[in-house]
Amino acid sequence: MTAKIDIGVLVSGSGSNLQSIIDNIEKGRLDARIRIVISNNPEAYALTRCRNHGIEAVVIRQEDHPDRESCDRAMVEVLKGKGVELVVMAGFMRLLSPFFLKAYPMRIMNIHPALLPAFPGLHVQKKAVEYGAKFSGCTVHFADEGVDTGPVIIQAVVPILPDDTEDTLAARILREEHKIYPQAIQWFAEGRIEVRGRQVRIRGVEQPKPVVLFNPPLEER
Ligand code: GAR
Image (tube, rainbow, N blue to C red; front, side):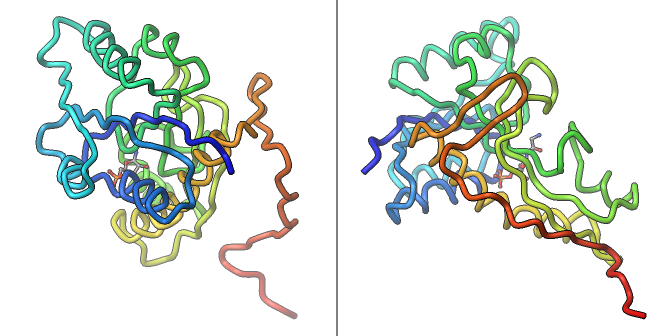
């Protein structure tokens, strides 16, 4: 049995990724304890999810601090005070300062609803549809000082269908987010993640199957 890792989750909105982490923990599939949830949005539905599951949560808003770094100092103080070993950004819509990144080097994960390095930033499901891309997906990566640029841990690919809207694509991607985030956190808890520069290796993991996807599909002739 793996020792449980103490995590802190940063949220801004609905918190469906937080919910998938909670569900995986409750089912005994994820060896983690959520020591604290921090929201920068007092209206976030993620806070209701915390109340429903007896998870401690606090609101820390940049507006209540003179600048980003002092806000981040307050967040780091809370996280360290709770013994948090891994910070999990789950729909947290704010960039972290260098101070925060230094406090948790290679110990901050983020999930992004696109296949990085394509479509970093915001509203990326809309951008992928408008671009006419044929595939998108989601990425779990370590946070670094850039916008969605840190070393990639795991990705899932979904097709973009001809009738997709921003919302239908976002829903298809979100279903896969809920699978890859708990997996990445579990690998971290098991101490199986090895980072060398940009290369992330998971010790003892199976080779991926050499599948190729075509969209639209090739036609037989
Ligand atoms: C998720 O799709 C997540 O990947 C995205 O926000 C959504 C949050 O949903 N994050 C970003 O865009 C970060 N750049 P949730 O609150 O239901 O987990």
